Length: 592
Image (cartoon, rainbow, N blue to C red):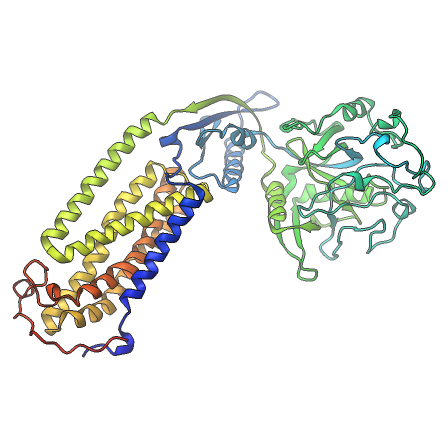
């Protein structure tokens, strides 16, 4: 029985949709001026860094600590979005391979020890002190108990999970009893979209009306960032370092292996503020986990941190000690790799080992902070024993061999299709060409927008996919020929009936292949994961080509007398079908 009119496809519209998709991808490539894929370490070269562990006793590190370090560094690599980067053990060393030129900076950041510390803030100031001549004169004496710090704390407040504390947007934070120091006209936290403070001119005390008309005074000793700051408990050597530290430099002291048993001077990650920090109260190794999410009550992004048993007691102790302190000493800085990534105000003691950081976070900034807290603490210290730039010459030779084998395989598939299917084989050849175009455009676009880098394992996956794509065509063509042989149906009817049955087989086969690729991708690393990614990508492209090109094209060709009347070169002639030639006139349902 012939399919109903409603089940008939509109092949012209489908082919136009595919053409629009190809043109859109071409337009993206043209706008981005991206016409060549990015290549991985084995094809384009890159950087290889070997990290050697350093222990306090000089003994060899335990394999458990090395495995943990490898996992943490690998998580950092995956978090940066670098494609085809590899992190692996080599004896007692860790080898990091990052593809592409100019990746040395990324490798340096990934390979540093990046020990996480929680430290009380003792003093804070902007990175650059504006001379008094450029600012209105502030009142000489702040209100009683006012915090003398001139800087702006990092936004966000840390509290227990039972309460929700938003960052203050005025001089009087809401939601808790205020000391006289917090009600004084001290600078309010400047909340930015990144969830971190921006010490700036807004962070200076408000000018007095009486002094606003006075002539500018020349710079004096008040240029000292610690002028008027309570220096009680601050090591003079650290205070001097605080005065000299230059947070405007690119590195800003990043990678500094700070001693947890000593006070330090440090910069913020943006380089807009500098801090004097107390000895480490809690080490990053005591962080059990950190997640980002949306508060169900306020709708704001928050970061939840969970501590291990020892860390929980240490965190409860330090938060209990600094809660009643005057600003900025009621802030707890999180120091990663020698830089302050966040310094929220502690509003109340936090027992139980669970804390929540809230502020003007975006989804990205909250996720970044959670990842830094979760993956920031390595169990070992490392030194970079070697840094090598890898040439892609050897990989280029292997690439030529891989492309040659792929070309031979493709030619054999084309010859087989043309000999066996004759005219119908041209559909298979055209479908392979379309699949090639879509695959190439996808690889180029992913390379320039998602940092995807084509490597030898990817090439292998793409070559193997030629057979997968050819299988889909063969399933459809054979089903169509069977319908014509057994049911003595006309070609146009057989095209539709065979498609209904063949697409189920095609989808099942591709689904099995795609599931296998996904499982392999998540369970494997390095080159094997790259192979799985290529297999999964080409499987999706195969489905798109069969549905958007192969079937519609066959439906259009079925209207031509060359195929409909079974010409000997069509591949659908009566002799090959094992039946009599079709009648000159065949009743076919009208298409909508």
